[in-house]
Length: 215
Ligand code: AMP
Image 1 (cartoon, rainbow, N blue to C red):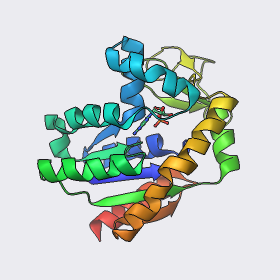
Image 2: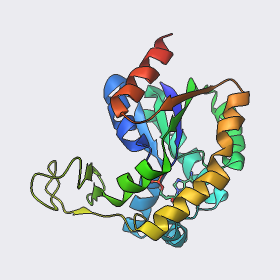
Image 3: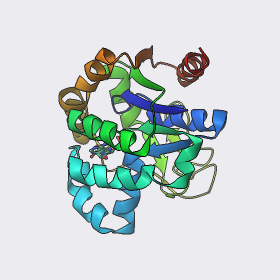
Image 4: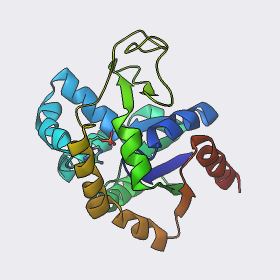
């Protein structure tokens, strides 16, 4: 499958992506994960991106587009891909369209995962992520705690609260989403590519997506 997942921070795009890759072997491309790995590795991209990320602001489009052009040219993308957190602005969507035309790739579906602000705030402040960059399993202190407090069930690394998941950064990320990313819903809606799904349960979202792709 070749799909774009839209939805505010905390809508569950990462969780849904992980379920979808198990479905057909497509690759999960999360710009947030790529950027966090770059910050951790101390690369030039990471150094340029860190401050924006910590504030809950968007990293400049030009940096994102260079990074994504490189990523979409990787051979594993031939298996299909799930774009999680990208595009995030209208200019990114326009550039992506040009890039996909150049690479002769069509998108099957754009999914808008819809979720209320209260649910998002609660989910994000209670979310914990495995600090191991090759694992990045997601937990929740209320609904899906680790078996041993603070330790990842899958790989044994410490589980952390992301630096952009403080209440202040979350409020900024939601504001950034409403101003810069939500306009993409109309952008893809008018192109007839959009399917909006109520995102309360990841399983429901995955089932609706796989049914739409088969139809
Ligand atoms: P995420 O994990 O998708 O919520 O992304 C975490 C942070 O990475 C965001 O708050 C932004 O600072 C940055 N980021 C991720 N994807 C993008 C993108 N497509 N454009 C600009 N910034 C991004």
